[in-house]
Structure formats: C-alpha cells, structure tokens
Image (cartoon, rainbow, N blue to C red; front, side):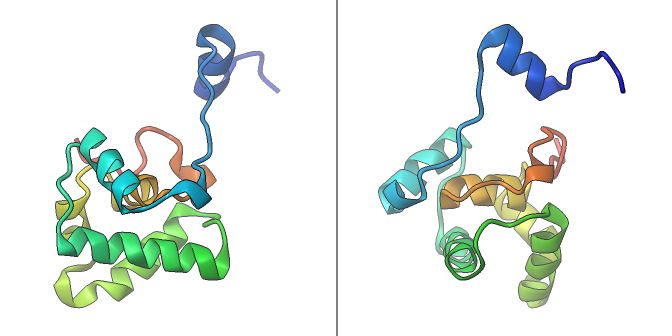
Length: 120
C-alpha cells in the first residue's frame, strides 16, 4: 500500500472538486446540446445516433462497467462506417468518454482517467 494519493483523491481533498454523476432523469435533447457545446461538438444526425444508442443501452442494461466493453460494442455496431475510427471523428476526445457525457449517462469507472480515449 502506498501513501500517495490518486489524482481523484487529490482533486477532492486539495481542491474540493467532486465528480458528480449525471442526473439521468433530467436529461433531454436540450441538455445534450448544451453538454456537446461544452465539448466543442455540434451535434449532427450521426452524433444523435450514437447518443441514442448509448441511452438505449443504459436503459436496457444499466451503467457500463468497463469502457473496453462499450468500445467493442461500438466497433461492431459501427463497423460498416469504420468502427471506432469513425466514432473518433465524431467524438475526438473519445467516443466512450464524450459520448456518455453528452448522453447524460455515468461514465464507466475505468474511463474516468483523463487519458482514456483521448487522442489529443
């Protein structure tokens, strides 16, 4: 065991920053549009397809446990369009991270690392 704090613990302890889970019930298209703007994304029909898929997946199966699981599902679902490569054109900071945020669903625990799914 180490005495060092994780980045999350530092943010919470030192700066008082706490990651809040999205309010899934308060989400609508207007909220999604605002969240997308914060991410410098203008939502197109292609974006809405991904966001809708994430919402339906969440409604059916609940929170996504591992980012790699939804990445594999994404890659298969959007294979004809180029899989994850295509999704990165829509969500440049990561289709899982940005997609879940805009869809208003909780991020998989292992995608909260700021480097997961980030190509910049």
